[in-house]
Length: 243
Ligand SMILES: Cc1cc2nc3c(=O)[nH]c(=O)nc-3n(C[C@H](O)[C@H](O)[C@H](O)COP(=O)(O)O)c2cc1C
Image (cartoon, rainbow, N blue to C red; front, side):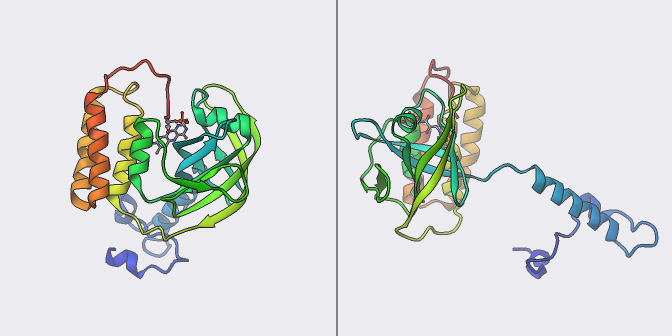
């Protein structure tokens, strides 16, 4: 952390930076006050524009026969409510519609995101506590949710769910750049039919640098899996649009 940022107490507003920091002190006010006020206004405006926080999960659902489905899904996070936005062609959407329940699994194992992005997968799991569903064995913590409302307007449903149970299994360690890079690569892998091949190649190359610098074996393996997949999948697929 830079020295300037280390000196800030948590309650203080951010200092003016860049262009604003270099501006001359205007009028009778103390040197730098107005640019700082302008910067604070900008920060507040940016905060007002922000949408809900999206947390990347492995969402588990069951079909009518009780077969589990595992899919990476970014969900709109709330303490009491979680909004899931599956495309209508996904198994996740059908299961939510048909059974009204899911488990939002939070895990630091990005291999599950990589595998789930490129194939239909089954992972080790145990029964959930409060809903008909399953909890990943590789989970750090989880939320069991029940559907409260479902808007199936194409192309992407909006499913509002209520949290009915929370569970914790193990610590979620701090940020790791390689894990985030693999998440981005997994999302790219679901968009090979939408994006130009060159753009995907360039973005993967940029993400690979981060993986090379900061990954452990699991992240390296996950990135290699995604890179191989992207290299071999036809550039334009006929699959329907996904996230
Ligand atoms: C990190 C990540 C987040 C994703 N979020 C969504 C999402 O919010 N909605 C969605 O429909 N697909 C999302 N996808 C793509 C789905 O995981 C993918 O389409 C998957 O095949 C759907 O599986 P299912 O048909 O078994 O439900 C995401 C993929 C990744 C890698």
